[in-house]
Figure 1: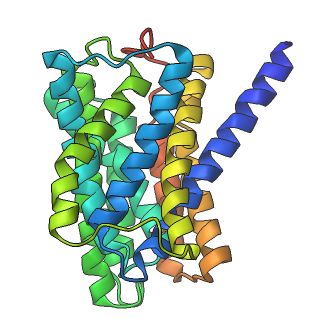
Figure 2: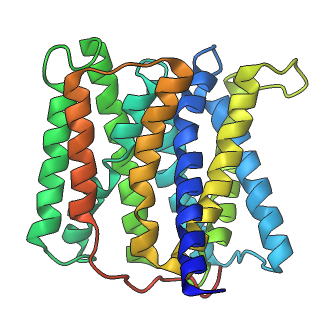
Length: 305
């Protein structure tokens, strides 16, 4: 394959991965808007992700390790990256537009950098710290001015989403600090999904939020299935980009996830946004650019996918 063909393939995969991930935002809104509890939705999406990642590991002949260090890794990723933040996201998604959710989720790199600096994982950079400040301005523009969001209640729920983003950022920094213990990303996805299922299972049935798959399927049930399947497939595409095109190129997926998340929400849910929100969106795009690392760092654990 020529260099041009490889680059074309990388850009095609980048666009497809970003658009698929962006599509999960309106699907999330559809899934939570008809009475299903967050625990039931989370539980089935974990089953879907674990199934898809498990099948991928079987075809690649990889077995996830279950030694002590790996179990700690799975448990912490499940807690920081799934159980707490996803519960907050699915609870808040009932009350805020899906496009707003997409923009707020894009703040994660701006939250992650200060944590990484505090832990000594990243070095101080004026350019990257300025990106954090631009992201902060974007948040203030979105939740501060009257008329930016539909109500002050939406602004309060936006803060709940930002709390979830803090947990996502903490997850990424924990992985960098703790190390992947030669687990690799796909096995980490499977193991953490399994750990989260074990924790959430009793809570799902005790709370009465279990979703019976034998019922008649509507758009809501397909949305639950779609979010789980698209997340697993998009994550696999992202890992492929990291492996073949480098993490800096792969990180550009953030632009596409945010942009298509807003676009899909406008097309499917007929959402509209204020001028303040569009200004915040533009600033988030700028902030993502500023916080990007200049060079591809080493990718821990990629030798053991």
